[in-house]
Length: 405
Ligand code: AN7
Image 1 (tube, helix red, strand yellow):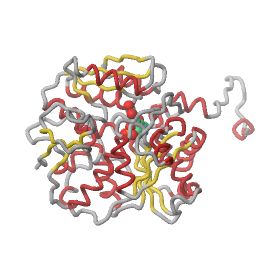
Image 2 (spheres, protein in one colour):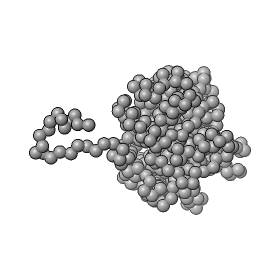
Image 3 (tube, protein in one colour):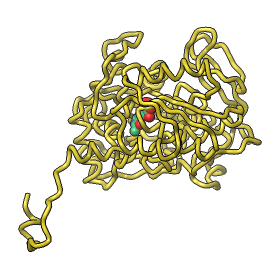
């Protein structure tokens, strides 16, 4: 069974049919949200199926007769991290490791649903602007579906692994001499002149796949954690995860919801700045800059949804420096064996900072969402780690060489 669905504007409430190609409200230009008929089904019943995005079929508004485009995404590990918890200063810490998805990031959860939707709408071509991971994921799913794929990337600011993926999966890659925000504007404008289906997170169907991350946390923990920490760029993921928790709550599967904690990089923190100032409207950061290129976004389209997620959940927000991000990335890797890219480490860095500043109690159970794999950005790792010790074959390898600091 699949749920019946419709689109609703989060501002004026105008509704659109699920078969309409519409990204923002035609009436007031605001964001759209997918409303589904919430099913009454137990977690136990769904748990009989493969652990993946499609386990939660009753919550995913894709009609039964659609052929699902999948690479077996989701079903990612939830690691208990006791050593890292000590470093962070929190009672209990888990990492939801989204690097384990087919293309190495959480974007795959959204793309399996988004590209299936594109096919069911009869689109022949899909497109996105991206800081990297969205393009890598879309390129792979478009290939799987046999669709043409166009991606716009900020020139010289996309991690090498992500660019390699987009190219190898056969996307047409356009490098824009500007940042992500400029590229997104360009691709949205193009969609009015050309028959391409946009799969940025402004597309509400994509978020229907990403919400399964919340379902999986409940499935794996068997209870509701206190806080869920999420790095924010375009702010789609935190909105999607919150929607997932809300839907499980309404369906009666859980009896409470966690607090959502959104973390941005200091050089690209328009939403955190807005909330700290108590502003009602977001002021974009014109020249966003951070080592975490995935979240190098100055004008996040989904900010109103992220504000709802943080406010409705009684949650938190914080910005972290590049140094804090790199330190967290290194400790996640060395203390726990989990390799994540810099943007992912922002969730752990944010939690550490919030606990140190007494914004969050140390006496909680937290889940940090680590959104992408270490290998996405090998260049950054090489820059921040010690060089290997190089020796020639005629040198005798001695313990002193290994023990040298
Ligand atoms: C690893 O690929 O925006 O707040 O174009 O790649 O939902 O945007 C990537 C975002 C966090 C932020 N972690 O998620 C893109 C893009 C990683 C990411 C985010 C991204 P959103």
